Image (cartoon, rainbow, N blue to C red; front, side):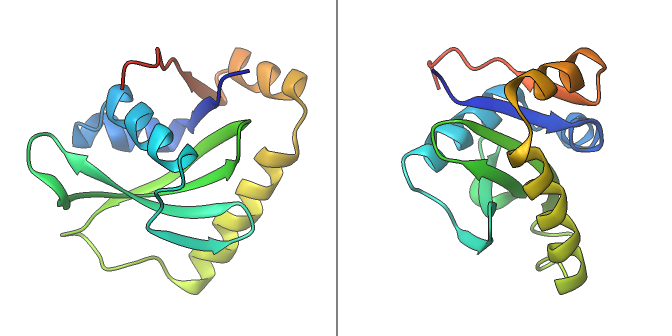
Length: 128
């Protein structure tokens, strides 16, 4: 079964404004699945750099995702490297709780959240 890539509505809004495409997310998800992560923040939480269109990862975005190997990846938060250095400890704890919740849901409950537009499923075709 392929990795399910999901994003919160807030993440989707911020990504759209910043020009972070689903294709870029799919590429990042494939890298995460193969073990290429920038930081493990505890539990299911990871930090991953994503390249900004044509400018490379160092000038790109930082994404905070919850990931369960071979099953699902939920994009929770993003910020530009030029916006801030990192998330605070309080933010990390809150994001960790949210990520743990998404990782513990059954596939049927995830389907329900996608149907209700609480989460948005990213369709990755494997061409990343």
